[in-house]
Each structure stands twice: as C-alpha cells, then as structure tokens.
Image 1 (tube, one colour):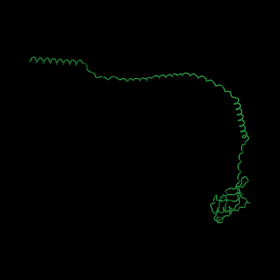
Image 2 (image 1 turned 30 degrees about the vertical axis):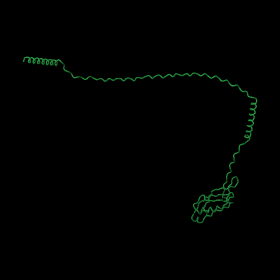
Image 3 (image 1 turned 60 degrees about the horizontal axis):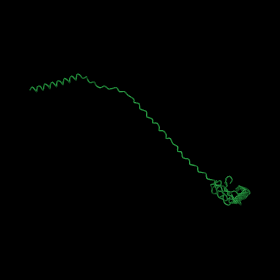
Image 4 (image 1 turned 120 degrees about the vertical axis):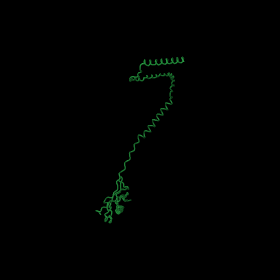
Length: 218
C-alpha cells in the first residue's frame, strides 16, 4: 500500500510540475501578431539593345598572274620570185585584149538611145443621132397612151456600127409604160447615126440616150 501511494504521489508531482512549466511558458511568450503585407514597388527593367555584329570582311581576291608565253620566233620570209619575161609579155597582152573588148562592148551601149514613150491614144468622139441632115423622124406617140395620159422617157442602149447604122437596140431604162418602150424601139431601129471616131477614123461604139414622150408635144 505504501509503494502504490508513493507512486501516485510522484506521478502527481511530475504532472503538476509539467503543468506549472507550461503555464509559465504561456505567460512569458509575447502574443503572436498577424503578418503585415509588404509595400510593392513597380520596377521597369530596361531591355538590352541587340548586339550588332560587325560584317565579316570581304575576301580579298588575289590576282593570278599567268606566265607570259614566249613569242614564237619569226619565220624567215620566202625569197621573192622574179617574174619571167614571158609572163610579163603575156600579162600585158591580156590587159590589152580586155581593154579592147570593154571598149567594143561599151560602144554599142553608148550609141543606143532610149525608146520614146508611146503616144497616148487619141480621144474617142461618141456617136450622135441629133442633126437635121440625118433625117430621123420622131417616134410615133401611141394614141391609146395619149388617151390614158401615159408619158415619160425611155432610155435606149444602141450599138452603132462604123457605117452609122444601129446594129443592136435595147431598153436600158423603161418609161414605166410598155407601149411607149415599144414605140421607141421600133423608131430607133431605123434611125441613122453619125458614127464614133478615134483620130478621125470611124469606129463601132455603144452609147445610151433618152427618147422623150411628152403629151404637150403629141
């Protein structure tokens, strides 16, 4: 019983000592303060300039000197050939012959004269049916055309021979009335013409003229 009591007493004393140590430590330590925020400052860091590398030096070209070739030794000139007297005489004869032939060839050219240009052809005088000496009667005006009031000009194409006669007659422009066209053809086929001439010589010729039908002259 005494041993157990002594153990309990020692345990209680140890426990009390620990509690008292803890209390003394709690009173001695200062109260903990909350952490304060530190002030912040903006610092601009300068950017370093890029380093400029110097350009590498250009390579120096070394001129290659070619060795000079030795000039070839001049060849000896051949000895001049003396012309024989026969060759000289033949050359002079040949030159004399060529001069003679050239003179003969140029002579007819100088004597020839340029041909005269051909004369222009003489103008043609066309034929005509006008003239009292020809005695050509006027075409007969058809009575039915007068009653109906038909009038106009008939263009006729006439091929006149060198003898002054109408070889062929055709209508080149109609008057618009067949009766007037037929009356003009019938009259002109029997007409006489003064033929066309060239340089005073009669030639065949074809020309066109009008035959008028006028009611005031019917």
